[in-house]
Length: 429
Ligand SMILES: [Mn+2]
Image (cartoon, rainbow, N blue to C red; front, side, top):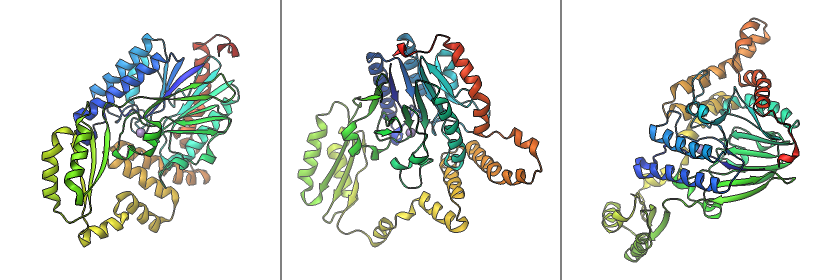
């Protein structure tokens, strides 16, 4: 039994506000789907951030609808879980993926955390913010108990694991992950990761396109962008990386101002030969120059050959103020916020809450921020009420992730069994 695993397609993302970049994301998604169909897999798993936004544009919805219809035609089912970009945390709100359930999308959700494909358990949990990591661990524990009952099991989850995240941005540590799944279909980390873990493999397929310029990095040069095909017929799953060409190149160049003309000519030569106008990350360094003049020269020379031109300038003489700003990286709002919150409260959970709120409020997700703070309140203060035995009835109604899973795991398995009433056996491999 073979399946394709992909993640972080961010449909609708419009890098630097460029319509061409939005189209690139749709193109590359279609290319991945083409290749998956060509690979003739048994099913597909998408590990979240299918859309760049939890209110996707019609174009983004259409791009996925097209892909889904093509997979349907090829009789390849697709399972998906919501990521941090495309989920709505507020209880009862409908995430965009719901639009596609009736035309075949198998959404792994609080209501339906488990599915089976022959003898394979496919289960998971939607993105859980870091201030609720306790609920995440509890959900993992419950799913892990189910895993032992199946011949093969896959955990689908969109979370940052500490090992592959920058400091303080993870929701879970590798040591806290359940160990008994055969395959960990992860999403969230945009680099490619393939690691032996537990009794199987843990994979982040990475983003499908270069979502941030920083993703045009060493990892990208080594593993490219794309998906993986996983073969479960072995003791340990076999993972094949499938690279998909991106519609346009990201060119990174540094020109020494002392050899400016020569350097600029080289860059021009390189980018002129490209079919699609590339993204250019250009730095002019060294020497003594006026940035505005140099910018005009660059723009005149190669402005028409690139999709975006945003050079950085590093002359020898940097203004004193600029140098100080450069050295004090703490001017990053995330870092500043954490520093202040730590000083004031000294509690890790408050720190996590502040980051979750920043992430949501800074992109206008007011409802989600409200949900996070309400949940935080009920988890950290309501428990105190419970211990005072003041209000047990209300606790019953509390809508924690654990409760959803408790309630829905059994139903979900029943559903799965009804859907696939055939005997589960090893012959399916
Ligand atoms: Mn993502």
